[in-house]
Length: 91
Image 1: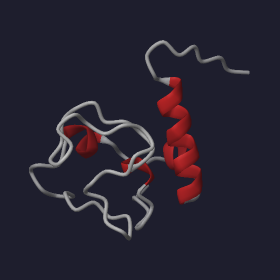
Image 2 (image 1 turned 90 degrees about the vertical axis):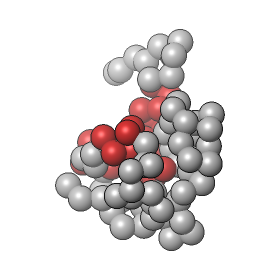
Image 3 (image 1 turned 180 degrees about the vertical axis):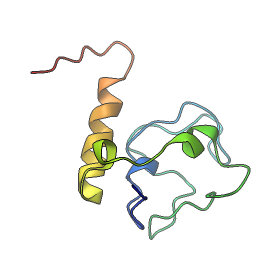
Image 4 (image 1 turned 180 degrees about the horizontal axis):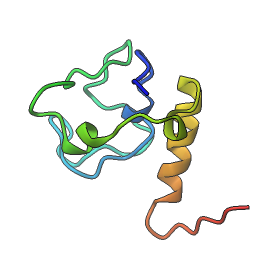
C-alpha cells in the first residue's frame, strides 16, 4: 500500500519519543509534527534528518484503513493501546 497524499495521520496521531529537528524532546501523541505542511506532507521526506522511526513506518491497510479518517482513528487506538501501563483487552 502507498501513503495517501495529504493524509498526515501518522504525523499527528502517534507519539515520537526520539528527538527530531525542531522537536528536541520528541512529539506528543495528537500533536502535529512541526514538519507537516498545511497540505499534510512531510517536509523531511527523503532527507537524512528524517527520524528513523518515520523512515521505518510503512503504510498498511491494517494501520491506515480506507481513508485518512480511518488512519487517524486506528493510529490513535494503537497509540493508546501501546502506552506504558495501559491494559488492552480485546473482545
